[in-house]
Image: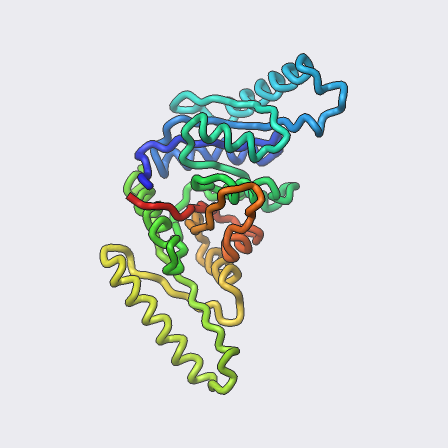
Length: 293
């Protein structure tokens, strides 16, 4: 996969309070990465409309009304440095509308809301993360408009390379020189399988695992920043990651997720699946393993 210098971005809006946060985040994203085409999309599910509103004339009126409302909201929040487009689609499954639009506009990055205190369960975002082949950025309404601390969550799996690649890409192309990128590994050893170990032995073996992970990182990525290793202890990896993000006031997390090829395959990886359901102020960039170039 080649990460382009200018990314085409597709932003999902749902006519809720979250829209203002997503529109405003474009100013942040513009500082992090040079942007290409910006496309806003809202899908109308005809089945959710009264029967009397489902004829072509009424649907056209509704679509134009929504487009006007979104245009007003965008202009109210930000003056864009380049052109943008607004797509109001009519698809029974919103996932299909996003898939079609992402192909039409050669999309590199999907931007969606990750509501923390606003109404909404995030069900659509979770589906789109699973079915869309490109990276997805989840933005919270509590985002920091001046992000500084970026975490690259690595696990030495096939996802690590693309996580590191995205981190390097942002660091290289960002217009801000004050960003801090920290590769992070959560060490989780199930010592419960060895009930005979004393607390001292557990600590000793934990320290050995930390040292081993740090040396492995240095061997694979000798030019990268030193690896930060934290221990999950009695928590799962996602909970340990969330705690670190909160305590260190991390603004942005890059995490690998499993890619899928059909709407019926909904598994994204246990850590990512658990983490995106936890409350956090950090924005989350979910990237998928692919052949790197």
